[in-house]
Length: 183
Image (cartoon, rainbow, N blue to C red; front, side):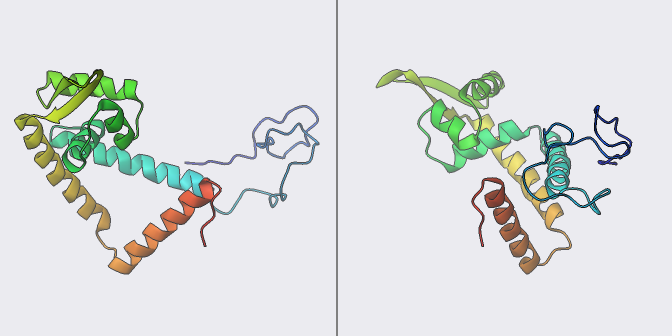
């Protein structure tokens, strides 16, 4: 997929033949930061490359979980319930990394499928406690098998040192993206 195209229509006053400014600056105004080199970059921006890879890997993981009768949201809920001592839907939403309203949608479907139970906390009736059912336990083990097989598929052809270096590179990218450059 081409991500850069010099033929983009130019705004009024922008020199013909140059790409449209992408920095939000009006034509003719200097952009903050260093000037990019002229012409198309030699490779896609790192963030774009990473986002595309993450999207493709995420879709393949969804497919692997679907073959085991699940999905990423269901897997994240099941693994959180299985590996952490959670007391409430709020804690579960935080552990999964989604909003409570989104979690409620997933929990409703999981409850209807018999994977979980929810009950009110007797000490605080506003709090719902979530637990796995026997069917939820079985679903967890099916999806765990699929997740482990997918992880093995991702690791194929890489040595342990390469994977360790890749993990460190991802940590640095995350830190750079959050403005916390790591050395």
